[in-house]
Image (cartoon, rainbow, N blue to C red; front, side):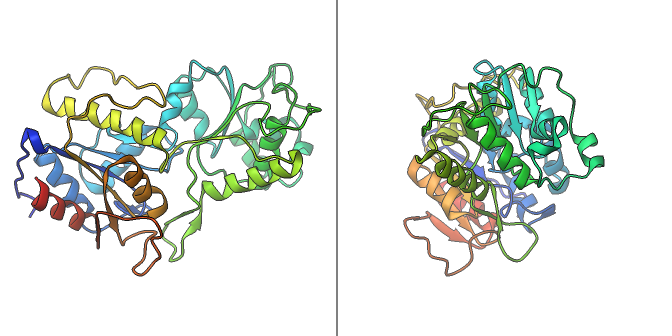
Amino acid sequence: MISKRFFQTSAKKIAFAFDIDGVLLRGKKPIPGASDTLKILNQNKIPYILLTNGGGHSEKARTEFISNQLDVDISPLQIIQSHTPYKTLVNKYSRILAVGTPSVRKVAEGYGFQDTVHQTDIVRYNRDIAPFSGLSDEQLLEYSREIPDLTTKKFDAVLVFNDPHDWAADLQIILDAINSKNGMLNTLRSEKSGKPSIPIYFSNQDLLWANPYKLNRFGQGAFRLLVRKLYSELNGEPLQDFTLGKPTKLTYDFAHHVLIDWEKRLSGTIAQSIEQKLPLLGTKPSVSPFHSVFMVGDNPASDIIGAQNYGWNSCLVKTGVYKEGDDLKECKPTMIVDNVFDAVTRTLEKYA
């Protein structure tokens, strides 16, 4: 089946975007058929990208891991993680509070942020700031750094990269930052407002996600709800925040640009060696070479509704968040299939 050939006409060129967790992998384990699916697309030079609300590692590290697990070549230029669009904010903010697992500091610095503070740095500075932190002294020394000007230089923005693990401490530190006086640590502004003292970005709003456990787990969307609820209780107004990731138009526009860029590399229009030119956040492609783009996902509330609202087709698989009989509400997938292999082969047989 892997050797089956599909030929696209210029008038009916199609492309794919794949979620990862629950579509290609379940935890670290490949989902049956995922490897064969991507091999078919590679062999036929059909463009595709990975579009995930996951993150925490560099695009290079993530694609190397997936390539090894699935035994297929995937380029770092083919993946959009939830925080990949943060690359476009490098020239906008100086000091950022990069919230997430310890690995996100390295990711932020790899993007080009020159002054990155991780939330563990603040706990290290003063344990009393986060009295309910679950970090041991050994973990704190491993994860954090001493920041000499932590109390004398202001923060410009809070960027939540992925789901943090020490929620009690992380909630306290974020709420301190967005209620501070001009972004300065150890301060509290006098006024109350829906607008935070410094901007805060969440890289996705998934309430649930699928891991190896049989029941869905809370994701960054749950963490965001807590931040918003606490902020509203303190200020009497809802928090004005920024959200990326699926299903937002910002992320789908960004992904569309990346997909067009990859198609040009496959076709030889631009060389593989040329550096990827990133679009400005919020910029819609003016021209697309694709007749149809199919989003293959397991989460109706992010993958499917996001594609639907953006004008892409969608394939809802049953290997992750979605289970047979779940209420799809306003979601209307183009097709519901058992797995990613069925999604791609059925799409190619019908449309290619």
